[in-house]
Amino acid sequence: MSTLRDLAEEHTRLRPTDIDHLHRLAGEWQLLSDLSFADLLLWVPTDEDGTFCCVAQVRPTTAPTAYQDDQVGRTIGGPEVAHLEIAHRQGRIWREGDPVWYGDVPARHEAIPVRLRTTDGEAGEVIGVVGRDTNLSTARTPSQLELNYLTTADDLAQMISDGTFPPPRHPGETTSAPRVGDGLVRLDAGGKVTYASPNAQSAYRRLGHASLLVGEDLAVLHRRLAGDPLDGTDAGNAVLAALRGEGPPRREIEAKGATMLTRALPLMPAGVPIGALVLVRDITEVRRRDRALITKDATIREIHHRVKNNLQTVAALLRLQARRVAMPEARVALEESVRRVASIALVHETLSMSNDEAVEFDGIVDRVASAATEVAATEVAVRMRRSGSFGVLPAEIATSLVMVLNELLLNAVEHGFPNPPSEPDAPPAEVVVSVQRSRKKLHVTVADNGRGLPTDFDPERAGRLGLQIVRALVTGELRGTIELRAGAEAGTEAVLVVPLARG
Image (cartoon, rainbow, N blue to C red; front, side, top):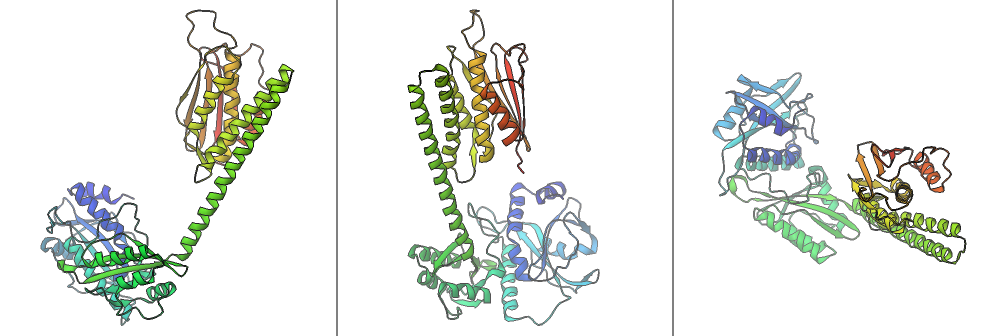
């Protein structure tokens, strides 16, 4: 399915700013669809005279749809577009005409011109038309709620025609909540409530307002209800800003253990401020879960911090023991254990500063590589280099992978460069960690330009503890594969393939 931008660029000569405005409208028009109990179709005139292309569609959540089939991408002309032509050419809302039939569904046609206001605030030219098509198969006498919905929908439709709807979007805000069905409050020009839906009344009751909302000054009520005076002031000022014709950001009010999200929208058809529309949603349970997640995250980070401290204590004890051991082989074994424990502690240190169970792995690899050159038993100055990025890895992969890389890097330094080169023009000693990451796998190569593998080397029978640890971790914990081979020109390569998907 083509996107709005694709269709507009293919069929029209609209400017990028025009298409951006249509995008903003399509991001906000679920509100108008629900208030209208109608499908909305966004039509733009094509390069061919007398034809229109549908670039977006939304169905109401408050009523049955008039269209079972998707209309996006459809191009029509002739008598079918007469109402669109009038709205586009004359720049006015078209509401005349008899009902039309889509299969066995009767529907009422309306056409709303879409304008983008100029930089000096004047109404610009018509850049598209919103078709508002209402399914009449369930028509009945409207209730008070439905009448208020329809009246508000007509005001917003006029604002689309004026170029004042939708309001500017504030950074970081989404368009998913609150919705019409969550709770709707309509205010007059003085800020007094003229209508409140039952869901809105229930939301305010949870905040502690037991009486009816009609007749209340909503800005004053927000200041009075909020447990935090600052939240109440912000929510009250948002209502006042909407009454002045501005589009304020969403605000939350918390009181008596309940939390309510509010969004205030100005109502100013034909440029005349007549009041405001306030959408409200009870988000008490959402905020309770947010707080629980924050507490859980803090607890997990503290656990990682304590594990890191415990591992560092273990490493310190092993280091002290190594200093008191007389046997060189035992001292080397203990020092290797210190490095292994310290590499795991690096992962937990990173996790203790993260908000989730994932780590930015590049920094860990760089620190392990730097440590390998400092502690390796060799007299050669070896340069470490990383090519590519590991990105963010889950903790279950990172913990095992850092131990594997620690062993491979130490092996590359100690066994690849045991002695200084005999030739004066020999290339500088270097170990390169190369990584290629795809959606499902991680390909890692640890390559050195040292003396290479012995001619009789068999990785499956190698008795070194480090290689045994590497094979066990790669094939077991990481569920991957490892290959040790001679380098293309010199040295040794260790090639890892690690699946990123677990389970």
